[in-house]
Image 1 (cartoon, protein in one colour):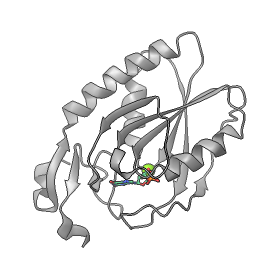
Image 2 (tube, rainbow, N blue to C red; image 1 turned 135 degrees about the horizontal axis):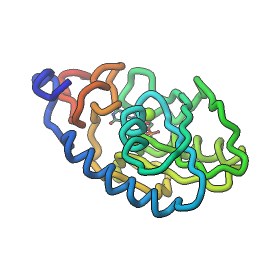
Image 3 (cartoon, rainbow, N blue to C red; image 1 turned 120 degrees about the vertical axis):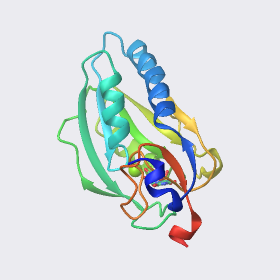
Length: 183
Ligand code: XMP
Ligand code: MG
């Protein structure tokens, strides 16, 4: 779906499909260099990170393994509760593996803070974070992410996997939702 298809529900487009693709290409080259000669396991957090995972994994010019985990922190609200629950756990054992968490967005950082300590307790050889978006002004905890696509303003965004009440995930761009949609 294109921004034009839901124009009245969007305030403005923040990042176009082409901008996202270009940035992921740059990040993929960095990941290839950083993990040269080492195995790599990408872990995406469902559902928001599914587009980043699909595009980043395909951009990588090497073989990687992928696994998925689903955590819940939001419901249909636009504010982080900090309460995280595992909805679907990983299939792959992380012990001794080089793990890269692929996330859609670091907002308050509470979800990733919890996820990072959960995954570290499984004894990976290394654990890093790749997030397509980060809202610096929303941070409640400091998250050390090795790869960040874009820093964005502290507004609720949708598209490219990100939803409001399960809608807009299939929007190709990332856009700021019009306030009338959720107020
Ligand atoms: P936190 O605040 O814990 O965010 O870093 C955790 C999850 O909340 C979702 N999130 C958003 N989803 N637009 C969305 O559609 C947003 O602006 C937004 N901010 C946070 C997202 O799933 C993230 O992983
Ligand atoms: Mg998410």
